[in-house]
Length: 251
Image 1 (cartoon, rainbow, N blue to C red):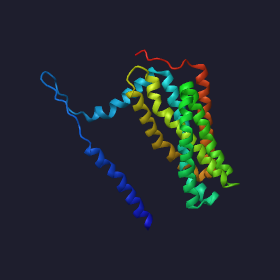
Image 2: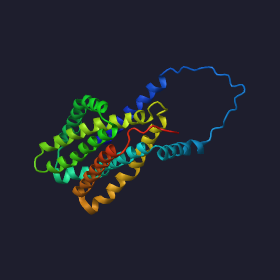
Image 3: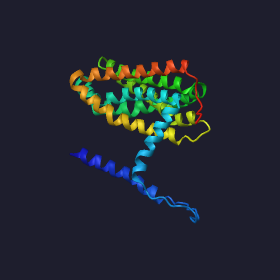
Image 4: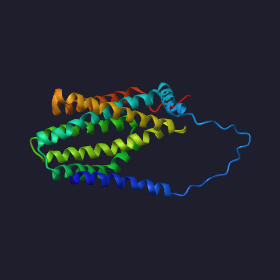
């Protein structure tokens, strides 16, 4: 059908960005290799070294470990809901494509655009644990409003507005966490850890949601997401009060 052509066109259009990246001119610096021992490419080292660096960082930095656990809980709450959303929208809300488009594209975008400056101000005035606690509270409101939208469709738009608000804060917290915890040191390993943990969540949690869906139905899966997000928020708040923040690396 027409959807197959549209999806193929969208995929091809996205690949075009690679052509622009390839066309960017590179500046090469001439380096003398005399006296420098060249190392052979080691694929095993390329695969396992990032994992070793992440493990060493997690073992050394308790504050960053707390952040990762909290973010893992909150992110899992959002991801576990994803397999249930199509069935919830079709079987319970009976949404049209227009209603879904307005909710997802417009309302979520408005939430992101309007609250990004507010999140930035809050980021400057609070620590990242407190900020992340607020983010996960907003994440918990998303499925709650989805539940309520079965009584009135207008609440669906509030749900995705809250999702946009949450996403603005989540993006800020996630992207800035490496710089916050690294302080004056190199933040690359912190960023690598963020990417790896997101990948791990993406491989496991949506599949878990799909497995739970036949047994507890969409409402049960969405409720699981609420509980995980609230657990993440409580975890962040507890550690924002009981932990020294941020803890500088001694290694």
